[in-house]
Length: 131
Image (cartoon, rainbow, N blue to C red):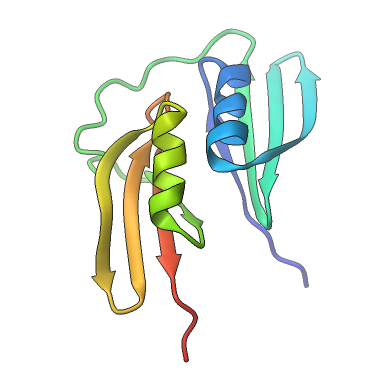
């Protein structure tokens, strides 16, 4: 059985957010789908899959997400990378905000927390393979 997860983001500006993910986090846009309800940008980065949905009627602002982990439910996604520092630098250059800088949190692992230009939180996770 092939099991995959495809995360979805509801966006204010789907095209701009898809461009951020392509330029700053090396995602590739696979498809652009138009529906009466809105537009879907389907992106991938290796086995990571992401949908960005812009509703035709527009999206509501969720309000303050401070702290980012305050509310129940999905609060962040993790992106596994080879170089956390380089990924964070590219994301910041593309418009992301650093919530937690690259930090070693256990042997062989480092992480950072970023907010994309629309405030979605991502954990950037670098882990060494077990020996």
